[in-house]
Length: 243
Image 1 (spheres, rainbow, N blue to C red):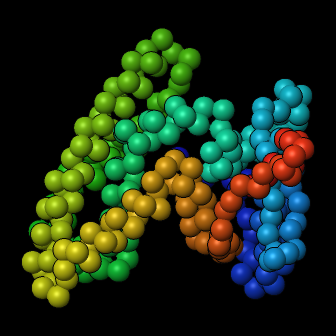
Image 2: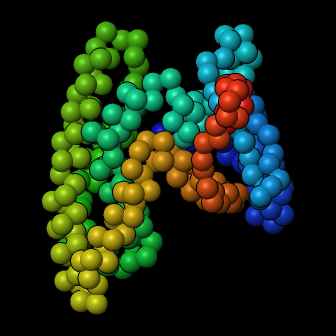
Protein backbone atom coordinates (compact mmCIF):
# COMPACT_ATOMS: atom_id res chain seq x y z
CA UNK A 1 0.00 0.00 0.00
CA UNK A 2 1.24 3.56 -0.71
CA UNK A 3 2.60 5.77 2.03
CA UNK A 4 -0.09 8.14 3.40
CA UNK A 5 0.09 11.23 1.21
CA UNK A 6 0.21 13.59 4.19
CA UNK A 7 3.62 12.18 5.12
CA UNK A 8 5.24 13.12 1.82
CA UNK A 9 7.09 16.36 2.56
CA UNK A 10 8.19 18.96 -0.01
CA UNK A 11 11.77 19.00 -1.26
CA UNK A 12 14.03 20.52 1.42
CA UNK A 13 17.46 19.21 0.42
CA UNK A 14 18.82 22.75 -0.05
CA UNK A 15 17.50 23.93 3.31
CA UNK A 16 19.69 24.59 6.33
CA UNK A 17 19.80 21.95 9.09
CA UNK A 18 17.51 23.99 11.37
CA UNK A 19 14.95 24.35 8.58
CA UNK A 20 15.01 20.60 7.96
CA UNK A 21 14.42 19.94 11.64
CA UNK A 22 11.51 22.40 11.63
CA UNK A 23 10.09 20.65 8.56
CA UNK A 24 10.45 17.30 10.28
CA UNK A 25 8.70 18.67 13.36
CA UNK A 26 5.82 19.99 11.25
CA UNK A 27 5.20 16.46 9.96
CA UNK A 28 4.39 15.38 13.53
CA UNK A 29 2.55 18.56 14.53
CA UNK A 30 0.31 18.39 11.45
CA UNK A 31 -0.76 14.90 12.51
CA UNK A 32 -1.91 15.93 15.98
CA UNK A 33 1.24 15.34 18.05
CA UNK A 34 2.50 17.74 20.71
CA UNK A 35 6.10 18.61 19.94
CA UNK A 36 8.93 20.95 20.84
CA UNK A 37 12.22 21.89 19.22
CA UNK A 38 15.37 21.07 21.18
CA UNK A 39 18.43 23.22 20.56
CA UNK A 40 20.99 21.58 22.87
CA UNK A 41 23.18 19.54 22.74
CA UNK A 42 22.03 19.54 19.09
CA UNK A 43 18.96 20.54 17.13
CA UNK A 44 16.25 17.88 17.48
CA UNK A 45 12.51 17.25 17.78
CA UNK A 46 10.67 15.98 20.87
CA UNK A 47 7.35 14.18 20.51
CA UNK A 48 5.38 14.05 23.78
CA UNK A 49 3.81 10.74 24.65
CA UNK A 50 0.66 12.29 26.12
CA UNK A 51 -0.30 13.27 22.56
CA UNK A 52 0.05 9.69 21.29
CA UNK A 53 -3.24 8.37 22.61
CA UNK A 54 -6.63 8.06 20.95
CA UNK A 55 -7.98 11.45 19.96
CA UNK A 56 -11.56 12.61 20.62
CA UNK A 57 -13.91 11.68 17.78
CA UNK A 58 -14.64 15.32 16.90
CA UNK A 59 -10.91 16.08 16.63
CA UNK A 60 -10.35 12.93 14.59
CA UNK A 61 -13.14 13.77 12.12
CA UNK A 62 -11.80 17.32 11.76
CA UNK A 63 -8.48 15.94 10.55
CA UNK A 64 -9.68 12.82 8.78
CA UNK A 65 -7.22 13.30 5.92
CA UNK A 66 -4.34 13.14 8.43
CA UNK A 67 -5.60 10.09 10.36
CA UNK A 68 -3.87 7.48 8.15
CA UNK A 69 -0.60 9.38 8.48
CA UNK A 70 -1.05 9.66 12.25
CA UNK A 71 -1.61 5.91 12.59
CA UNK A 72 1.52 5.29 10.49
CA UNK A 73 3.62 7.61 12.68
CA UNK A 74 2.28 5.96 15.83
CA UNK A 75 3.46 2.63 14.40
CA UNK A 76 6.89 4.16 13.69
CA UNK A 77 7.33 4.93 17.41
CA UNK A 78 5.66 1.69 18.58
CA UNK A 79 2.69 3.56 20.10
CA UNK A 80 -0.12 2.25 17.89
CA UNK A 81 -3.13 1.03 19.90
CA UNK A 82 -2.66 -2.45 18.37
CA UNK A 83 1.13 -2.39 18.19
CA UNK A 84 1.67 -5.80 19.82
CA UNK A 85 -0.72 -7.57 17.45
CA UNK A 86 0.75 -5.78 14.43
CA UNK A 87 4.30 -6.64 15.49
CA UNK A 88 3.33 -10.30 15.90
CA UNK A 89 1.84 -10.46 12.39
CA UNK A 90 4.88 -8.66 10.98
CA UNK A 91 7.42 -10.99 12.60
CA UNK A 92 5.54 -14.21 11.89
CA UNK A 93 4.22 -13.49 8.40
CA UNK A 94 5.59 -10.36 6.74
CA UNK A 95 9.16 -9.71 7.81
CA UNK A 96 10.98 -12.23 5.60
CA UNK A 97 8.95 -11.28 2.53
CA UNK A 98 9.50 -7.57 3.14
CA UNK A 99 13.25 -7.90 3.77
CA UNK A 100 13.80 -10.17 0.78
CA UNK A 101 11.88 -7.73 -1.44
CA UNK A 102 14.15 -4.90 -0.26
CA UNK A 103 17.18 -7.09 -0.92
CA UNK A 104 16.01 -7.75 -4.49
CA UNK A 105 15.44 -4.02 -5.01
CA UNK A 106 18.95 -3.27 -3.81
CA UNK A 107 20.45 -5.91 -6.11
CA UNK A 108 18.47 -4.55 -9.05
CA UNK A 109 20.12 -1.17 -8.44
CA UNK A 110 23.73 -2.19 -7.78
CA UNK A 111 23.96 -5.34 -9.94
CA UNK A 112 21.46 -4.62 -12.67
CA UNK A 113 23.07 -6.70 -15.40
CA UNK A 114 23.54 -9.74 -13.17
CA UNK A 115 19.91 -9.62 -12.06
CA UNK A 116 18.84 -9.70 -15.72
CA UNK A 117 20.74 -12.93 -16.37
CA UNK A 118 18.33 -15.73 -17.21
CA UNK A 119 19.57 -18.08 -14.48
CA UNK A 120 19.24 -15.37 -11.82
CA UNK A 121 15.89 -14.12 -13.06
CA UNK A 122 14.54 -17.67 -13.13
CA UNK A 123 15.70 -18.25 -9.53
CA UNK A 124 13.38 -15.57 -8.15
CA UNK A 125 10.64 -15.30 -10.80
CA UNK A 126 8.07 -17.65 -9.23
CA UNK A 127 8.52 -16.11 -5.78
CA UNK A 128 8.18 -12.56 -7.14
CA UNK A 129 5.12 -13.49 -9.20
CA UNK A 130 3.39 -15.00 -6.15
CA UNK A 131 4.15 -11.90 -4.06
CA UNK A 132 2.91 -9.58 -6.82
CA UNK A 133 -0.34 -11.52 -7.03
CA UNK A 134 -0.88 -11.33 -3.27
CA UNK A 135 0.05 -7.66 -2.94
CA UNK A 136 -1.99 -6.78 -6.01
CA UNK A 137 -5.15 -8.25 -4.49
CA UNK A 138 -6.97 -5.07 -3.37
CA UNK A 139 -10.09 -6.88 -2.21
CA UNK A 140 -9.95 -5.87 1.45
CA UNK A 141 -13.61 -5.06 2.11
CA UNK A 142 -13.90 -6.07 5.77
CA UNK A 143 -17.65 -5.46 5.74
CA UNK A 144 -18.40 -8.50 3.58
CA UNK A 145 -19.30 -11.79 5.25
CA UNK A 146 -16.33 -13.73 3.93
CA UNK A 147 -13.80 -10.97 4.70
CA UNK A 148 -12.31 -12.82 7.69
CA UNK A 149 -11.84 -16.03 5.74
CA UNK A 150 -10.31 -14.15 2.83
CA UNK A 151 -7.84 -12.38 5.12
CA UNK A 152 -6.94 -15.67 6.81
CA UNK A 153 -6.29 -17.24 3.42
CA UNK A 154 -4.10 -14.32 2.42
CA UNK A 155 -2.17 -14.58 5.68
CA UNK A 156 -1.65 -18.31 5.07
CA UNK A 157 -0.35 -17.68 1.55
CA UNK A 158 2.00 -14.98 2.85
CA UNK A 159 3.25 -17.40 5.50
CA UNK A 160 3.96 -20.00 2.81
CA UNK A 161 5.77 -17.39 0.75
CA UNK A 162 7.76 -16.34 3.79
CA UNK A 163 8.80 -19.93 4.42
CA UNK A 164 10.26 -20.10 0.90
CA UNK A 165 12.57 -17.12 1.41
CA UNK A 166 15.61 -19.00 2.87
CA UNK A 167 15.75 -21.49 -0.03
CA UNK A 168 15.12 -18.84 -2.71
CA UNK A 169 17.75 -16.58 -1.12
CA UNK A 170 20.28 -19.42 -1.01
CA UNK A 171 19.63 -20.31 -4.64
CA UNK A 172 19.89 -16.67 -5.70
CA UNK A 173 23.25 -16.24 -4.00
CA UNK A 174 24.59 -19.37 -5.70
CA UNK A 175 23.53 -18.04 -9.12
CA UNK A 176 25.06 -14.61 -8.49
CA UNK A 177 28.39 -15.97 -7.27
CA UNK A 178 28.51 -18.33 -10.27
CA UNK A 179 28.21 -15.34 -12.61
CA UNK A 180 30.76 -13.17 -10.82
CA UNK A 181 33.45 -15.08 -8.95
CA UNK A 182 34.61 -11.89 -7.25
CA UNK A 183 31.33 -11.89 -5.32
CA UNK A 184 31.39 -13.74 -2.03
CA UNK A 185 28.48 -15.37 -0.27
CA UNK A 186 29.48 -13.50 2.89
CA UNK A 187 29.18 -10.15 1.11
CA UNK A 188 25.66 -10.82 -0.04
CA UNK A 189 24.55 -12.28 3.27
CA UNK A 190 26.02 -9.30 5.11
CA UNK A 191 23.84 -6.97 3.04
CA UNK A 192 20.76 -9.13 3.55
CA UNK A 193 21.42 -9.28 7.30
CA UNK A 194 21.81 -5.47 7.37
CA UNK A 195 18.36 -5.11 5.79
CA UNK A 196 16.91 -7.57 8.29
CA UNK A 197 18.48 -5.64 11.16
CA UNK A 198 17.12 -2.30 9.92
CA UNK A 199 13.67 -3.87 9.59
CA UNK A 200 13.73 -6.09 12.68
CA UNK A 201 10.39 -4.76 13.92
CA UNK A 202 7.33 -3.25 12.26
CA UNK A 203 8.15 0.06 13.93
CA UNK A 204 11.63 0.06 12.38
CA UNK A 205 10.30 -1.09 9.00
CA UNK A 206 7.72 1.72 8.90
CA UNK A 207 10.31 4.29 9.94
CA UNK A 208 12.75 3.07 7.28
CA UNK A 209 10.00 3.14 4.66
CA UNK A 210 9.02 6.69 5.58
CA UNK A 211 12.60 7.94 5.43
CA UNK A 212 13.42 6.14 2.17
CA UNK A 213 10.19 7.40 0.62
CA UNK A 214 11.07 10.95 1.68
CA UNK A 215 14.43 10.67 -0.07
CA UNK A 216 12.78 9.33 -3.21
CA UNK A 217 10.44 12.33 -3.26
CA UNK A 218 13.26 14.83 -2.89
CA UNK A 219 13.02 15.38 0.87
CA UNK A 220 15.94 14.07 2.90
CA UNK A 221 15.66 13.35 6.64
CA UNK A 222 18.55 11.59 8.41
CA UNK A 223 17.84 10.36 11.95
CA UNK A 224 20.94 10.11 14.09
CA UNK A 225 19.36 8.95 17.37
CA UNK A 226 15.94 8.09 18.75
CA UNK A 227 15.58 7.75 22.52
CA UNK A 228 13.03 7.98 25.32
CA UNK A 229 13.17 10.88 27.77
CA UNK A 230 11.74 10.04 31.19
CA UNK A 231 9.80 12.34 33.46
CA UNK A 232 12.06 14.25 35.91
CA UNK A 233 13.13 11.95 38.80
CA UNK A 234 11.23 12.36 42.04
CA UNK A 235 8.14 13.96 40.49
CA UNK A 236 6.55 11.69 37.92
CA UNK A 237 4.50 13.66 35.42
CA UNK A 238 3.44 11.83 32.22
CA UNK A 239 3.24 15.11 30.28
CA UNK A 240 7.04 15.38 30.40
CA UNK A 241 7.68 11.94 28.87
CA UNK A 242 8.79 12.24 25.28
CA UNK A 243 10.66 10.69 22.40
